[in-house]
Length: 212
Ligand SMILES: Nc1ncnc2c1ncn2[C@@H]1O[C@H](COP(=O)(O)OP(=O)(O)OP(=O)(O)O)[C@@H](O)[C@H]1O
Ligand SMILES: [Mg+2]
Image (cartoon, protein in one colour):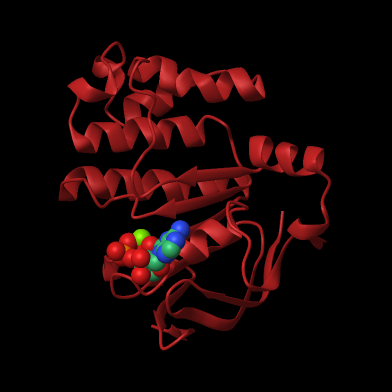
């Protein structure tokens, strides 16, 4: 799947970006950095179908998101898009395992033990989100996203809550995933080293994306 972003502009109380365009092909990765409040999460929300911009369009495989039927949009969200949120929205009443299992229920794909082992969460699967650490919650939300096998992963500060060692493991996992599934990774991060692991790295500043 290709992601094509054309002439995006958006403002809330003040303008965040203007005329931003880029194209990502299967297997490629892109990082966006920038100071807090510069609009990185907003850009990620627009590209991942969650928010409509003031101007411009987002295309998945040459189809504008804004010309899809409600059903087409639901299918894209269910099957193609995986979003790792800056604050991971886990369901509090469900165990870690049930939270992850939800995406398998939606897509009908089996859950992989290997993924859970690699994320180091096999031993906390019975616990509820309130009883595990922030970093463990983050890894549960990553497991939930990857087990859907999305074609495009949108990751908002995926390593923000993690110690250096776990962050490195999660980074490797994300890049392995896009390599073996020919998927796209769109990453927002404050970590310049992580940004530079991507094929393209930008800073959102003065309304535009500048190459790092
Ligand atoms: N739904 C909204 N309604 C109104 N203003 C919003 C909304 N979402 C974001 N904003 C504002 O837009 C600006 C950019 O927010 P955004 O979350 O995109 O920044 P960010 O670059 O991701 O910051 P951080 O690095 O702190 O996560 C902020 O001033 C924020 O308050
Ligand atoms: Mg943000």
